[in-house]
Each structure stands twice: as structure tokens, then as C-alpha cells.
Length: 171
Image (cartoon, rainbow, N blue to C red; front, side, top):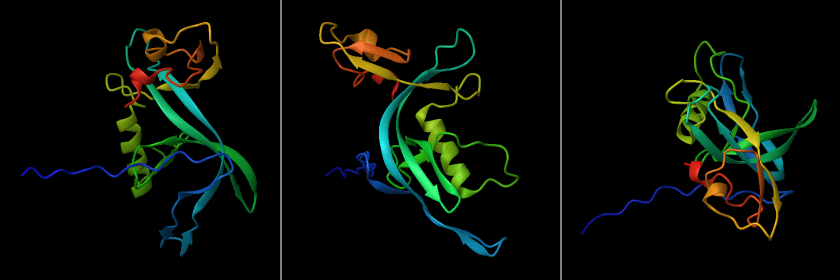
């Protein structure tokens, strides 16, 4: 009998208003305390579409994201997190920067792996893909076709209202 393994299922996208832990507490022995957990309240879900910034490159990508409202003692702000598809770390910050740390932390290594898996770095040019937020409007008179599913533009005006826009580029 063949043994079947199932991958852990990623967390479902939160509903607007739902509070989610975005980052677990991280011990920081060098400074003598633990960095607290980061919580955010879901504001809205978005789809991002993009391509490599090198002219003529055919690398394309589409990813789902959620905008969270994050607050701490010094204020509140909105921040976009990408759906990683990983049950262990379902949300990674889109604006995460690499290369500034002398010693990569487990978090930065994890985020880099997620970015690579999602296709957010062009494998040919090693650059980060430029992402744009999809703007969608449902137009019942325009049938959704392969042109929508393979689109890299940030505008969708067909019957799907953006639900299938760029799906061919999702990993």
C-alpha cells in the first residue's frame, strides 16, 4: 500500500475586522528581552500582479495579499502582507528588505524562502519583481477569457471582477 503525505494547509484569508497574529514573539538575548508578537486587524484582501523589471523578460507573478492595520504603543499603520501558502508562517510582510542584516535571522531566511517560492525574485536576473495592486470592476457584458487569466496588467474589467485575473502566474 502506498503511503500518502499531505502538505499542511495554509491558513484561510481572514475576514475584514478579524485580528490575526502576524509574527510570533522572538527572543533577543543580545538585548536581554523578547520582541513581542505582532498582531494586525484585517482591512481588505488584494491581488498583486507583476513582472521582472528587465525589459523583455517573460517572468510574471500574481500573489494574494491582505492589508492589515497594525498598532503598537507609538501609533497605528496599514501594512500589506503576502499569503505565503505555508501553514507555519501564513503571512509575510511585502516590504521586508534583505541584505541589511549582518547575520540573517531565522525570520529573514524564512521570508526569503517564501519570496523565492512565490516567484518574487526573477530567476534569470535575480532582481525583485515589481508588484502592482489589481484594480477590478465587474462588467457582465465582457466575458472572462484566457486573456484575463494570463494578464499582467493591474486592471481587470470583465465578468469575473478580478477573481481570476492573473491566476496563470500564481504558484
